[in-house]
Amino acid sequence: MYEGIVQELIDEFGRLPGIGPKSAQRIAFHILQTESVDVARLSEILGQIRTRVHFCEICGNVAEQETCSICRDPRRNQTLICVVEEAKDVVAIERTREFRGLYHVLGGAISPIDGIGPDDLRIRQLMQRLADGTVVEVILATDPNLEGEATATYLSRLLTTLKVKVTRLASGLPVGGDLEYADEITLGRAFEGRTVIG
Amino acid sequence: MAIYRDEAVVLRTHKLGEADRICTLLTRNNGKVRAVAKGVRKVGSKFGARLEPFMVADIQFYEGRTLDTISQAETLGSYGAPIVADYALYTTATAMVEAADRLTETDPAQRQYLLLVGALRSLSRGEHSPTLTLDSYLLRALSIAGWAPSFQDCARCGRPGPHARVMVQVGGAVCSDCAPQGAAILDDATRELLIALLAGAWDLTEDVPEQVQKRASGIVAAYAQWHLDRSLRSLDHLDGSQAHTVAAVPQSTPPSVPEPKATA
Ligand SMILES: [Zn+2]
Ligand SMILES: [Zn+2]
Image 1 (tube, chains in turn purple, red):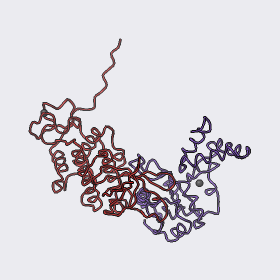
Image 2 (tube, rainbow over the protein chains, first blue to last red):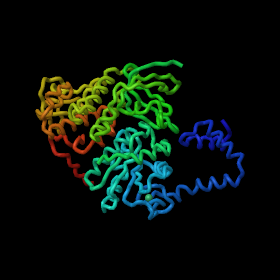
Image 3 (cartoon, rainbow over the protein chains, first blue to last red):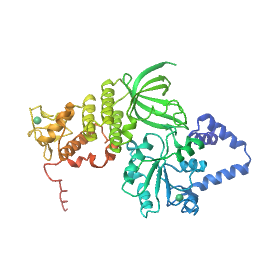
Image 4 (tube, each protein chain N blue to C red):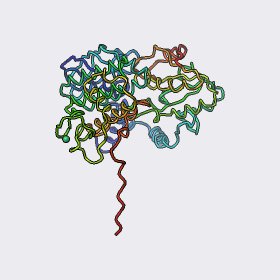
């Protein structure tokens, strides 16, 4: 245990996902020894992040304005929507450079045991986006694990009521895993070989 | 470090750190176990989908100080894929594992294990309707846990039935002497269905009208809710027509109207 504020800093880092007590201590001491301008910049960003970052009104991705840079980009293919669970999945798919359409971020996956049903996700907003018939294909890119598959099952059933092609990323993705851990090549291949499910 | 091996069904999982998961498992011989599956969320994990909810596996554990660690897993029953391909099966199976999680502790629960595995297998094969499978599972799981309902004889005084009222707080059907004012009605068809579901007499559950099934489901949900202190979250998310609403149970008197306030 360290004294007062140093221990507080270690405890705060230790609360972050994926950071154990040893790493927390290492980061805390790194900050103590770092030039004051760098630390000032870090603390400024931390202070502003909650007020400056929003969620895109259209797709739910993180954005610094009312809409995200992807939704604002007229060069993106407006007839394709790729449905993902979280904003970090958008980043993973963008890295592949395989996809030039738009996204829709659900905000999670259906998990009744955690009290999360379809109404708790941005599914209604997705249906609204599909209403005018511009979109011809919806690609379901939820995680290749149980909740992700169940969410895709629910969506594909819901989307059969519309005149839209529904596809699911091809197998080859890590079954049981998180989309964000798929490497660019595997994920890119999964896009190319996506299968029609509805 | 001690190593042990057991059969287990995965009840639920939680993300841990960067790429691990904590799995809550109901084992055949060691009751409920919480164990870490390292690297399971990474590409090419040796576990693959073997540690997803609803999967049954032969598992080798390393005993740890707080949590055990899963070192090997071989699939015994792969019920996840068929269940997840049908949304109604998914929500039903989720309610089952949630109930199993609430009804078991670390002491051995072999009957609960066998009941759950049997129910998941039956569900994945589409043997009966998901609603009936769930209701039968809940009644029998609660019975094993020591809360066996009585739908024939009076649950309070034991007077031989059939009786026309039901009170989940008392444990099932109640005779006219024991039934308090406003106790819900138990009609013949619903009573017979509940008795069949409790006994697993599947041949008696076929061709039962939907209205009767709904009333039985309402009583099962209310019974489970009463004995589990708080309701099962998953019951609120069952697929459309299977809704387990307690409101489906008819009351013998209309909902009470608040008494007019006495004026001072
Ligand atoms: Zn957007
Ligand atoms: Zn009685």
